[in-house]
Amino acid sequence: MNRYAQFEHLVVEIEDRIATVTINRPEVLNAINVELHKELEHIWGVIDGDPDVDAVIVTGAGRAFSSGGDIKRMVARAGTAEGLSHALNIPAATRRIVHGLLDMQQPVVAAVNGDVTGLGATIALLCDAVIIADSARIGDTHVLAGLVAGDGGAVIWPLLVGPQKAKEFLMTGRLIDGVEAERIGLANRVVPAEQVVAEARDMARRFTRSPKWAVRWTKQAVNKWVRAQVNEVLDAGLGYEVATLFTADHKEAVTAFAEKRKPVFKGN
Image (tube, rainbow, N blue to C red; front, side, top):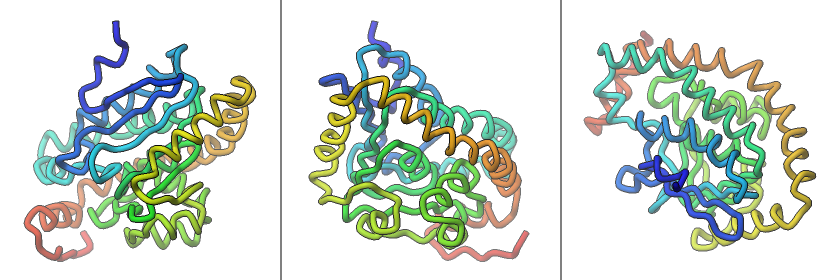
């Protein structure tokens, strides 16, 4: 039985012991709805247990890697019982994604083929290497939706660019292109968009051609450092993010986005 047949919004292809995981909701820029979120919680454990996979590439279908959380679903949930149920599930669900990426044995390369924001950016940056298109834009836009960047952004951005720059990006939602992302340390390589997957595959092959256990255990040794920050920051960030889901400014932010108008924030 194909262990990957259970996934609807993730396409998994294996070639030369490299699994390519494609986030497959291109019609909405690979926005992460509840169903896709659940798949992202479980896919890493399934791959981790696959003896036929020695490296992983993660990319997006179409012209984006992932636009992060599904704003239309946020609008529908705001102020509802469904919204409350969703909020209560966020911490445990998000921890499964973060820990799944960090704990899986195989090295993971993010092939950022297009724009990547919010949770999408967190997933890419938690990978072991990032190849980004020069035309791609990256940023954590939680604050523009009236939310705290609690699902991992407050963990990984300071580790990669330092607290000062991280606060600028996380507190403004500013986007930068792939060239700037590589310059400041958010990506390992920047290449033209049409070369992103090929470059990611080249890096994945380098991992698979190296001694397997040396590669896997080096990843785990370095990720001890990353996990220390996860243990220190993630739960607090998630708690703050859940709290902001119940603010009037969050509802205004997502409603204004859906209505294609400028939001009017009142600080409550």
